[in-house]
Image (cartoon, rainbow, N blue to C red; front, side, top):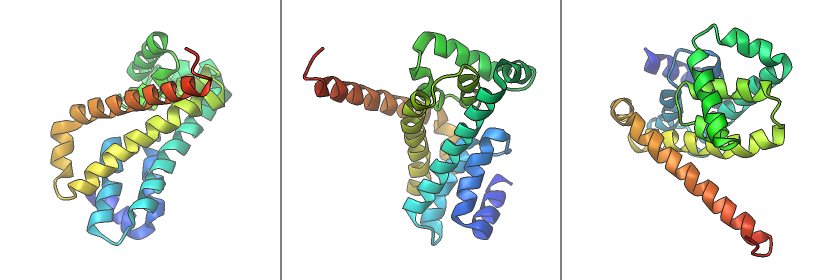
Length: 199
């Protein structure tokens, strides 16, 4: 059913469907996030969609939905979080708050790779009044890596990605997390080097 729904959307609305599906995931669209991101890659291999616009559509859908949720959190603050804790997001909110206490700002990046936590993160961060620039600094690269990992999976295995996702989801989450940590480490080294080599 998920595959039929996504195909219908892609054929009807083109690249806009990839944006919309990835945007609506945060708000409860009944399609797994990984499945939708991988599907955006699949259609570039099995139809006339071009990879770059398809990827950018999926990525921008993910990031703008997170920005919207961040804004909702900022606007309604702790009242929103209290309300969300009476929903299915309760566990994700608790897990993200624990991660935030342990990892600080890096929790924003790590949350993209943790199902359930990914949905709760922008609301909690917005309600906590994190500065927008700091939020984007951690969210945009992590969202890029997450989207790219699943998009590439869909492109590489267009006819087997459903089975692969079912069996390798935790492997991909781990691999994506390692990629983010590597990118962050690299950026930290470059940043320190840019300050005259001071440690």
